[in-house]
Image (cartoon, rainbow, N blue to C red):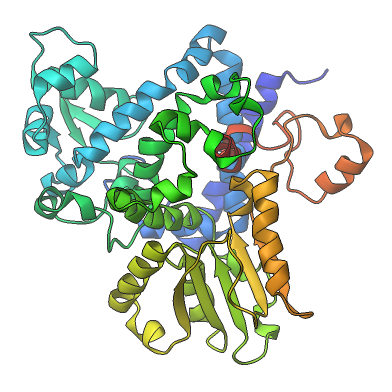
Length: 448
């Protein structure tokens, strides 16, 4: 008798948990603790073990599929419907520096009244945001937002209206003193060792706002069918009529540009270093070979290459101010690499002719997916025009597997799909929500 899907998913979770427990015992590395107030390096090392990574992904995929299978359908769908409210709650806590306040408060946490007070939040306005009545207190309003997040395991409520950090909320910590964050908010993410908080802040700000207008843009009889950059959801949201990257260069958008440059590093760091180091046989290149990191942001890929392959020269290109800020950052954080001249920064708009004519490799990481075909073609055409006969183009981007069964794919697509890491039934072939980062970034690209 065939096992039910419910039983198959349950068995998969049990088997995968046993695998994690065995690896933990063999390696002496503790399993992650959700209530731990920081990201414990010793437990995260477990995620560098291939078998552990596969087991953890299977657990996450099966767990989310179990929720979809067993929750009342309307309840499950309404979690997605209310997703904007959850994201908005997270942005409130990020902008209020709640994670850093709780870090300084210690493991016993802090009462919501005190968090709101340290954040200089107007209790009435915060209450209005959450549709509270006019008599609502700061405590009630703040607790509602943080309890909403704690119910999704971001922060933890250690006592009534008292919250502390956990393993998930700790990912939002800039590691800076709270006093510095409030005295210099425009540079909250500048000089931080972990760029993930910047990536979260960027996504919750401009991208989230633009997402609210996605349907209005798609149904527009002109903009909805346009590949032009002036017809994006961003343009509808911001009320601008110039290409987004031109608007972005305006002096008034300096804070956003700084945030974006750091956020790109945060997005990239969510993937293992191997996505860069294994993308090409870098060691085979001759001494002094030139790598051009096109749209390279603040140089996170260049750092990986520069540290492992000192014989290479890396030129990081991005918009002039992004490149200038990156250079200043490297002078402070990586002076030995910067002063050696191994890694240099160059202001360049990739929609204009490529100035470097002696490149061994043009490297594009997470660039092409964000542009419509005509604009991606412009980027690549400029690179082709600047290439030598032995120049190689290396593109690192997400490959998005289908959610449908392998047997439903046309033969030509199925042959390509076989090269991808796919899950066996009853899981979705693409591991579903446990492998959603690429699909999330791809859907965000529809906004721009």
